[in-house]
Amino acid sequence: MNTDIATNKKALRDFHILSKIECGIELRGTEVKSIRDGKANIRDAFARVERGQVFLYGCDIQPWQTAGTWFQHESKRPRRLLLHKSEILKLQESTQVKGETLVALRMYFKGRRVKVELGLAKGKTHGDQRHDLKKKVELREAQREMARFNRGR
Picture 1 (cartoon, rainbow, N blue to C red):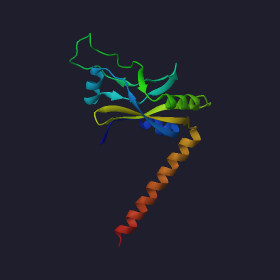
Picture 2 (picture 1 turned 90 degrees about the vertical axis):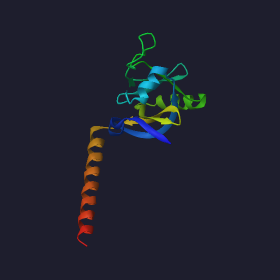
Picture 3 (picture 1 turned 60 degrees about the horizontal axis):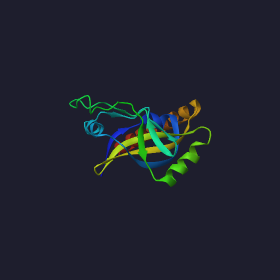
Picture 4 (picture 1 turned 180 degrees about the vertical axis):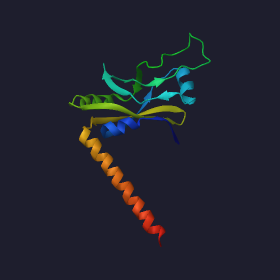
């Protein structure tokens, strides 16, 4: 059973998602406790491939309140993502293409483990965003008309 911790709605608005990949994340004990308490934010999170490893940047996990200063973690530190070497090489090739990046789409529990869903994304232009908004409005209006028509029966 997958339970979402945090989702990145901004990524779906700003990017075309070309493919998705699930990966583990390397965390400290206080970070897991904060995540269980619901204090995680991935709104500005993205990933980079560096030196044969994938790191997640911009993921904000608030410090655990009852932990001492020695055990405390930094809220926006880079966190290593856990992937197989073949997956890392595929991601590295994909991000070499101009305009493509790795964006964190959601963070969730899979069993007892915390997973991150990354999306290989290409940025939308302003016109694309307006087109998506127009499609959404048209769909909503069509659903209203169908509901109004079905109520009259």
